[in-house]
Amino acid sequence: HARRIEGIDKNIWVELTQLAADYKAVNLGQGFPDFSPPSFVQEAFCKALNEGFSMHQYTRAFGHPNLVKILAKFFSRIVGREIDPMEDILVSVGAYQALFCTFQALIDEGDEVIIVEPFFDYLFALSKQLKGCGPVLSSADWVLSPEELASKFSPRTKAIVINTPNNPLGKVYKRKELQMIAELCIKHDVICISDEVYEWLTYDGTKHVKIASLPGMWERTVTIGSAGKTFSATGWKVGWAMGSEHILKHLKTVHQNSVYHCATAAQEAVAVGFQREYDVFGTEESYFHQLPIHLHEKRLRLADCLKSVGLKPILPQGGYFMIADISNLNVDLTDPSTKDEPYDYRFVKWLIKEKGLATIPVSAFYSPEHRNEFQKYIRFCFVKEDSTLQAAEDILRQWS
Ligand code: PMP
Ligand code: GLN
Image 1: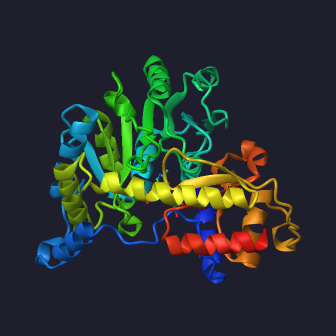
Image 2: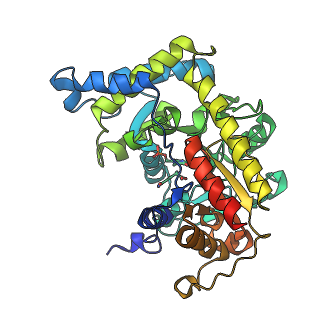
């Protein structure tokens, strides 16, 4: 095998999704809705499939024209500048591939990337694939320390990655925090990779701010989005990267030489979905307005349940997930097959095997250096049918 794949062979999603399936567990683990996407995008997908040959064939490499046009129109209004559909957008196979193209295109061996912990685990695997390019990690506190963050920038720093709303914590960066990050990026001439796949999902009046909309940042930001999260259709694997043409052209080079493009009909359906959302934006009809209201209830319900069984949930301001402190629970984890694993991994496996409930260990979102400090949290996904949440509640209540 190639050396670049060393140390990234284990994957939490592959492992735990299989374990959850093997034990037929109630699944609050992997982040996907167990309800259907809104009917307007489902219908658009079916319609696309019946529209003759073209939806079954190749489309433009960097994004189906209908999709890049509406993404540009939609986000021009949000970012407050004219986005060029053909130059400033790359449609990818999910946000995963947008991140892959960004790293491959912009980060060289020997470059440093600052990744704020906790982070979506894939980022660590991406940086490991680039030999000699170690991620420099900032503090794991829930609030970014400006001093500590500033101290991580060096002449070798090429990029910083932020994720707002954050997976797994649910932190939504405030404008002031983003301004602080933006100033550092400008001062050190660093690119900002902003993963905003949960951008529409904020709660309790929290507002999502795009760092690309701050002064001086459009030119140096790659914003990553996902139709999977936007329209509750994670299996469609449509995502995008958006940013200035002088950066995006390099991502396109990676894309055209790897997957070339993603499924045409799925892109067409996402285009129809965005056109519909463009037309109803800001009204109560908008899915981007309705989904967070719907999820807010589920989030409160899960938090109440976790509290009532002695767990300490941290209420997220955004996203799909809630983490909870499990240190209050005394569980006898004697399964010898997991004895060398971090506490939260052992706990999560015990919970699947013995109680039939799947969650995710939070230490998976930390670098090996900091993993030990974060072994007492597990992550729950609340983007689930009420019946699924009820089944999880029944399990938690029975055992506690
Ligand atoms: N970024 C974050 C923060 C995520 O949680 C995920 C997984 N949903 C992705 C990127 C990948 O998204 P996609 O499913 O569109 O590839
Ligand atoms: N991003 C999703 C999560 O955090 C799942 C990613 C995956 O399954 N590879 O749950």
